[in-house]
Image 1 (cartoon, one colour):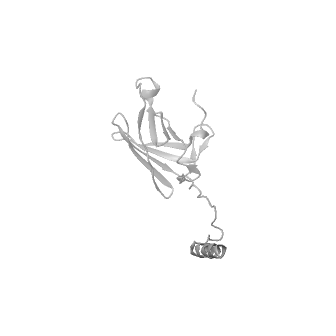
Image 2 (cartoon, rainbow, N blue to C red):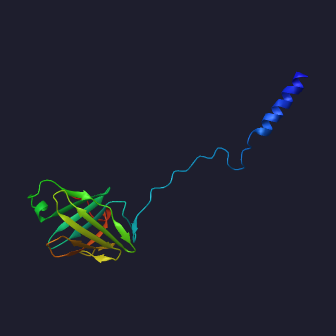
Length: 152
């Protein structure tokens, strides 16, 4: 009799337990991939460089930080890097970075997804425009940092 009662009790418990959904057993969640921020073929979440001539300047953007260098930096007049937080506002084929640097200088870098003939026979993926209050706008080229030669 005890065996019969135990068997009935086990059947009642099994009937009250939720059944596993088909195909849902032991499924581990998949981590979402980090979002990419594209401008043309350039991933703006990866290091980017813009470089201008006459006057010479470079802007490197990596890990959400912009580093600006001009003739004062290249000549040794500036001893600390001028940096600032950089997050682009992307609209269509244009990305705009409005940044206040660590020395208080403000600048706006606009990148456009159009090829740009650079010095020599190089062609860069992006066209750049640099605006600094009180200075003439500068036109230049930009690309993924890996497209430029390593610094010496």
